[in-house]
Image 1 (cartoon, rainbow, N blue to C red):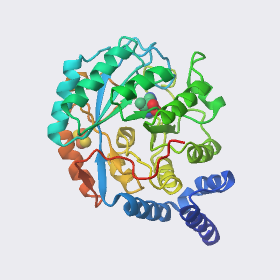
Image 2 (cartoon, rainbow, N blue to C red):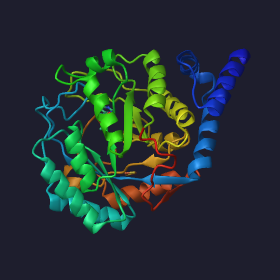
Image 3 (cartoon, rainbow, N blue to C red):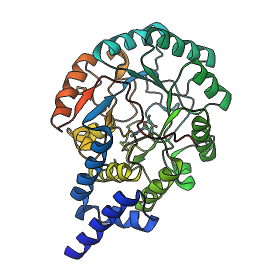
Length: 356
Ligand code: 5AD
Ligand code: FES
């Protein structure tokens, strides 16, 4: 036991020094995570502090449509879910959410939605321009799925700064078990590459503990991320949703999600790493624990309370009944317990130009 402890700690020292490990080394750490998670978190929080101090960035999430043309097996707003009550926000409603967010100190807005063709490129461009015109000091992040290079380019020219598109898993075989035939792993990865090419700050990411995921897959994720060099990595536990084919599947585990956060922080030291809502859903102090594992971003919901329960990607999602003002107060208190503080800032990536 003592011996294993030394081996794992030495690997963590090596990871901190060299910022990468081999597949076998990552796998060894993941398999022996119980013996070294405290030591990992000590290192990952130190590295975060060296780069971002005690600052925690907030992103205001505006979930503007839950219509989706896709049918991802894990997701509560998949098109086959006839129990989902569908909604779309108007441009005016989106702007009202942004107004509220701005007054609460948000300087980044994340426009997230299902893949909904009602919002044509022109409509999206108009929404981006309207927010940018009113709040030129704010960053705009899009999270609206797979689009063509030309569409991504139009959105960038309209003023979008960042784009979130989780790859969900870096293993093609695994990807196909989570998605229907009409979706392709190659296209997903190609989208991420196009976004980088266009100069977006890009967020990739995956679920921890999604059905059929193995520890080997998680080791692969770290190698994949090291090569992709995204500016943000969004990871959270998979949580089952009662109206999906995965309703009886086990949810992802807290300890494993935290461990992955720590490994990602040491592998990509400058990365923006959210303590996700899903993490806060599987454990009442999940987001605080995420920050103590190396995360430095939280993304509270700014959507109107009237639609929040309708954007149910998974069961029991937290913060669906609370006003944005209440949420941010609550989060501020929670984050203080970690020794960190929410800051009013765009919260850009601190590092070199990773768009190669
Ligand atoms: N559990 C956890 N996360 C989920 N997402 C979608 N469905 C689930 C679920 N059941 C995540 C996906 C998606 C992001 C918006 O939410 O990773 O990219
Ligand atoms: Fe939303 Fe606590 S953060 S209620």
